[in-house]
Amino acid sequence: MLRSHTCGELRKAHVGTEVVLSGWVQRSRDKGGLLWVDLRDRYGITQLTFDESKTDASVMDTARKLGREFVVQAKGLVVERYSKNDKIQTGEIELEVTELEILNAAKTPPFIIEDNTDGGEDLRMKYRYLDLRRNEVRSKLALRSKLAIAVRNYLADLEFIEVETPVLIKSTPEGARDFVVPSRINQGQFYALPQSPQTFKQLLMVSGFDRYFQIVKCFRDEDLRADRQPEFTQIDCEMSFVNRDDVLGVFEGMTRHLFKTIKGVELDKFPHMTYADAMEKYGSDKPDVRFGMEFVNLNEQTQQKGFNVFDQAELVVGICAKGCAEYTRKQLDALTDFVRRPQIGAKGMVYMKCNTDGTFKSSVDKFYSQEDLKGWAEKANAEAGDLLLVLSGGQNSVRKQMNELRLHMGEALGLRNPDDFSPLWVVDFPLLEWDEETERYHAMHHPFTSPLVEDIEKLDTTPGNVRANAYDMVINGVEIGGGSIRIHDKEMQKLMFKHLGFTDEEAKAQFGFLMDAFEYGAPPHGGIAFGFDRLCAMFGGSETIRDYIAFPKNTSGRDVMIDSPSPVDENQLKELGIGLS
Ligand code: ASP
Image (tube, rainbow, N blue to C red; front, side, top):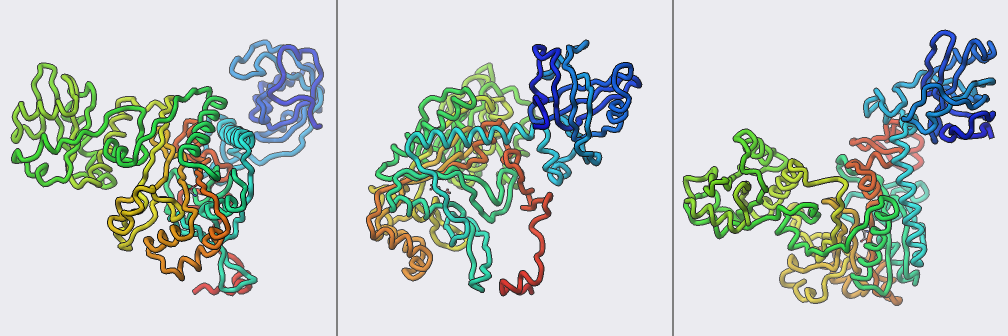
């Protein structure tokens, strides 16, 4: 080893020992006769000292040549520091260097590699390998590793087997666009990268694996947002001979275990909420239930009183902001501006203040008497001092808008504490979703999801009302995982494909292998997949998954460090039989 200790290891107890350290020069200070160098490695920082009156002249010379990020080896004596530094773990000691070797010189880095860096996001991404030297960045990846290991241990203890599934496959229908890879040997044909290992894990159940998991890369060619990456990681799982509650039990157990062992947080039993309730009370299938502020349907209280906007609305819905009756005109205008932003798209917002003197004040006083407004307050359980915010319109759009306003208010009132965790299961999702553009139904989860048995008969009459045996794990308004009990019967699967608008031939061409497998004894099975990057971000208390990925892509899907995607050689294209027009 080129060192006897790491840079984070030495303490007062080591005083008087001869040691060898290796690492990077974080910074050096030259005070004439005295020189200090902060030597850094993954484990910490140790101060090296050089003193003209004691240190060998050649060592002194070498020390004066050191620049930021030089890689050096230093031998010396551990001594107690005169002025201690309680900010670092080695702050009680320093190393009086007797031998110094430059193992590798370094160019001046493009940004300062310290906790407080002067490097902007783009620059740090271009030099990601330098950014990864910073504690903050590296510690996020260390957390990721810890989580992955804990997951593996937990599932292995429960007899889950980790199986790798192929990356060059055929399209998997998870609702996104596939990344495709041309085949040289089979010109004109393409592989697709898996959007998830869905069909393979189901085949493993047919193979009798009983309990499968895999921490696996998935690929989806979607428009990117801050929390999306074209390649991301799932904890993908599948179990045989289970019903929904068996699957939920195992993975609630796993999540609780992770929170307890990694964050020291004890979680209660996860409540269940139906999709229908989630939409009605929170306007979202991933409600943030750290706080109440549930939606209140005000149709009965507000319609037929001459206010046209409400009369024409399918839904008039309110939320009660506790203790906000004192909001100023300016604050209320800001809320109206918020809901009117094009991303949210409300036309306007109505408010009603429950004054402390027992009177009510609304922005639509012209149409409503004090008695009417009292009715609103009663329906919303609003008390003196509270503020009611009301939106109206088509049910689907107004719920979405109110969801945004509720989250915004929750944030403004400090009700979304990142250290509180409120998990829940959202269950009974619709099986099918109508797509306006293609004018046909799509599987809301994926086409292998089983309908609830009691709803099967509705498939022919009111397919939009059929519920799926599908579930999502939601924590603090974030979808952490989702899965379903699967169809394991060929006829049922055929019926499902038919409802999704596949002809028999199309279904056979795309999923013939799965339907064939179902004819050789497929056990009842179900599973779930967790967004691992997102789980890491949640554990780390951050919003962006990018921070938890060693070499992420930017919002245009580019890796700016390796400069990819990039053109390929014309010969490469020729070999693939591809011409660019
Ligand atoms: N394959 C699904 C997904 O990626 C998860 C599952 O149903 O297990 O969302």
